[in-house]
Image 1: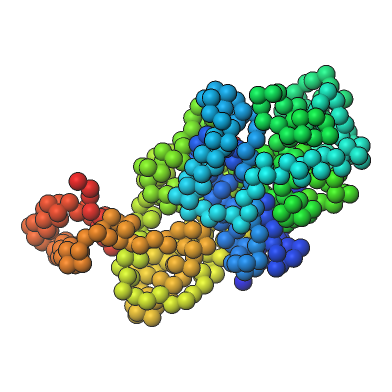
Image 2: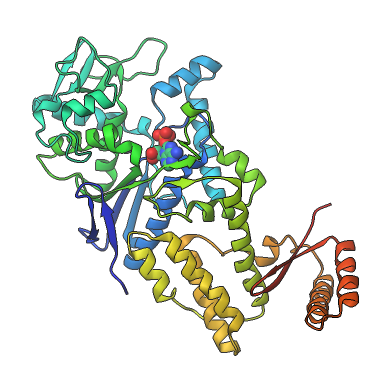
Length: 462
Ligand code: AMP
Ligand code: ZN
């Protein structure tokens, strides 16, 4: 089997992946802040790292991977949403955490092994902040605790920026109580009408960055294998996570590989709430099967930008039609236990090259149609299903895909026979016969899609 290489943002190169302990491969991904619906850009890291967790399980074993993705359920934006709507904070966070789970489920994203909630880890955050204060990496000022970036000489190593650039670029909040403008908040005071917890520095709440440092330490250890998230998190979020964790842990690395997905864009701009150009997963999942959305997200390499538009979804739906068309034709063939084909695995193991892997998967549909024996078909079907499982595609019931699972067997057989007749008539250039059959299919509300590997059909609604 080909070795897994991953592009590490920290060293800016593709590196051979070597876990510290192959029996416990650890991955942490920054999860959602739960105060509103996730857009399809937010779903990109969820899908990408879901694929990576499947690939890791494929290599190291199902039970030898620990994947943690947090839920940020205390944050300025959540508090603002609560003030705006009058809804209690916990109602908002529980509601949107549930919706996030449902939406990601619709995209075939498996629930991670651990989903730590920030509010369940306040004690761990306070402990970590206390260590940083005791060791003079952090200081208290006016009820705030701040990390003093000048105490960590590798600050900026992940994003490769100088402190001056970082401060200028990120519109760092200037405040009197900061020693340096780049110092960032570990703990801040809470107003009476805001959620807060007792601490050595008074009633308050944690900053966003300390949440991930404390939760990853608790569940994965001081140093873990992979840390992931969107590229917008490199600075300041991940830079700050590293500073906190490395300083609290006596200089030990936080994670050995740092992975970042690129942006999903709508033409010119990144999809984001502030740009006002978001497409919510919740809405998209009503108009398209979740599998179409998942496939579309995987058509670009995870580090490359991905342009989202209707054409992409139309093309993707057609690709899945072809795959399910083959699976439907092979419905009576018993798949043999198989591993995914070598070129498919090689592509995925090469820094998760999903576009190349999907094209290898697609080749199998052509091979299936050319196969001459049942043994060959059984092997190809097995490979197709095994490859599909690794990327979370092609695991459904083909009849359901084509909306024909409710049709009685006899009717399905009749339609298959009609399509065979039509294809034969067309091959013989018997256009009268071909037209007659087409009319009959139209009357039965059957839509036929012809592809290079044969025809598939679906029942139109209504
Ligand atoms: P947020 O809830 O904004 O913190 O985002 C959750 C995750 O989605 C983070 O890992 C972000 O980096 C990622 N993300 C947000 N917008 C996009 C986008 N347009 N394309 C890709 N990833 C994004
Ligand atoms: Zn984080």
